[in-house]
Image 1 (cartoon, rainbow, N blue to C red):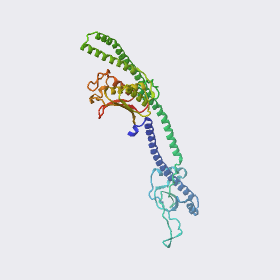
Image 2 (cartoon, rainbow, N blue to C red):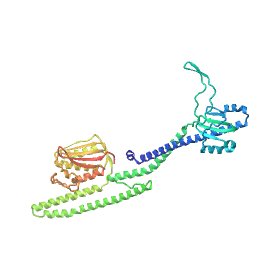
Image 3 (cartoon, helix red, strand yellow):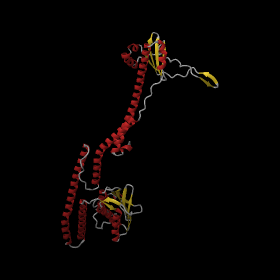
Length: 463
């Protein structure tokens, strides 16, 4: 059942309904076979009664010297008849079969119906058949006078005269005719029609759900998603309408927040510039230098925030990009700036992404590495479930308890990283935000041989 519940909804519904149909058909088949057997048995009983009654009436209407001929003609391998002074039925049954048979005989043979005796199974056995030919057994001739008699299935006795009974036994019930191809064709038609209708209904439910899932996935990765059409059953339409409303509210919230932070950062530039001018007019000294340093830091943070908000509010389209060429071009730019960097990328790796944003994320990680390490190595590799971009350096690394906190905006690690590089502490935060917008993740770990490793995990599927 766990295997079934992990499959798509269409597979679950088809398997459950087809299984229920198969189970019900099997039960119905066995019930039908049992009812068929009972009906065939009842028909054989009535046939034995009516056949014996007809022969009895014939014997009553003919002369006594033709009785033997009538009995001989009426007997066969399946039916055996004879006349005796006593009834062959030893234990008459007072069962519904006898009652119904007597009622059925009332219309045609009322006198016979009154004396009908009926018994399922063996009563008195019929007389032995005529002598059989001589056979040789064990080299000694011996005459067979009797062969094994089959066990009677139905025994009927009807009085035809005073001290004269006509006895009849059915030695073999008629075999049921084979089912043939019609039941199988009917069952196949049932399956085809049910599965066909089921697939149509499932498609009407699953197609809107699939469209909703794709839209939700794109929205979670930062893609611009239009309103999802409200289609399908009522529950699906209600869910789609709630998703569209949530998307609109979320878009307005992010837009308002971005606009507010950008406005605050922009408005801070004027007082920071005024304070810098006033500080430069002060006499030279330690206080003046520290004030200018603080103002420069505030200006860098403001510019970084503005850039971050500008990137957040941008709507770059997703395109197929050669990821190998992108990573290699970023690494080449740093080598041209005189940085010690090496890289290993596949010959070609096509991926659907927002190239400018992803370039910035990779550039931020490499920039962070080359500032604090002598050598940096970049690796791009395709894995089973992800595409990884690894930036490894031989720098001082980061304390284990700080590996997650460095992703906070404006977070600085004075002990582990140099703080006099002019950065505002947004590089890692921006990089992780970009990667998560692509549906991936960015993790840091200290290498056993020393240094830091930043690994970008991108989902191994197109956006």
